[in-house]
Image 1 (cartoon, rainbow, N blue to C red):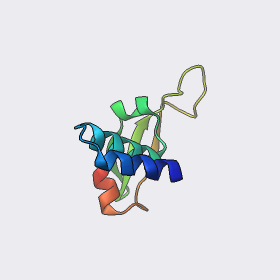
Image 2 (image 1 turned 90 degrees about the vertical axis):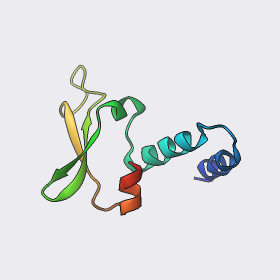
Image 3 (image 1 turned 120 degrees about the vertical axis):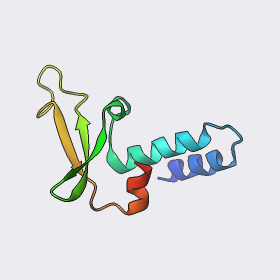
Image 4 (image 1 turned 180 degrees about the horizontal axis):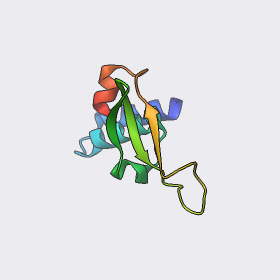
Length: 85
């Protein structure tokens, strides 16, 4: 957490146009635990009236996952975090 906060502080002072993108990517990765490759197919879906992230499992090769897709409940997150995702 300390290192992440230091990185965010450094990114906030950076003139690089990619700095906000990098910070957002790290934030949503921390919130969701998704692997970078899983973001390509991830979508927010409504399941039983709650927001969920529908994710194609990156480890669904050679039987290493419980199935080809998983759903992560986002209803415990606030609206700003969901918007960021």
